[in-house]
Length: 307
Image (cartoon, rainbow, N blue to C red; front, side):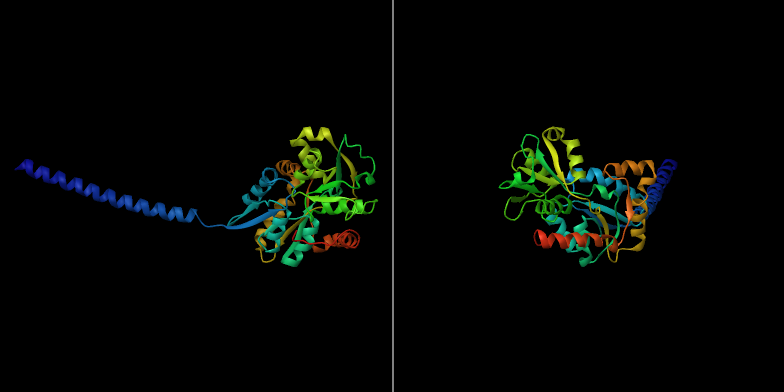
């Protein structure tokens, strides 16, 4: 009899233990769910687009560290870096308002004002914003008129330093670019450089930062290709923000980018971009670009930002 009572008592204790553990498990699960929900607050993502001054792989290597640093200083928001396959794709996104922040060339910067953007900054080192015209060292090209009847390659019609400025230079130094040469638009700076290296064009145009980057990655090209001519400087690439973007997000973006040159790790980040700093700017800062665009339209060809 005693053994039966003891068995029943043990059974009751076991059942109670299971019940208590079950309650604890449920409580722990509920606590875990609450904790998870508080930890996974959904952040608003803002897209930062950069025009195709580098190929996509290289662009992410160079600019993602800056984006990471901006994100470290944001709370309920994050910046997502986005590349574009070519200038036309970037222009289309900009025109549609796809970007929240962007780093366009000066021509695109001026055009962005028509599509709901404002300028808040720019790359420093304006002396680097110029066009360069490359030829093979064995090409026997000695003067600009030697290009007559030949093909010249460029990244895209809307590339300011790498296309428009070289075309203006040629037009004002003895070449009618609409009659004397064949203009070949190949999509990117790298493609433009490779076209002259591979003898697909007698000359190609790009800008100093793309050329420096390409030489580091492809030293064999630098051994065969040289800068033959270069244009005057203009103003470097702008930083733009879409109207309506929260002020607190813009302030973090500004604070990080404008102070990169003031810290050792920040200097390492901007050294990848081949610049010494970013600096504040406004819509009025880029008025000088309109002066060049007027001369270009009157001397060379019409403009179409959609290209």
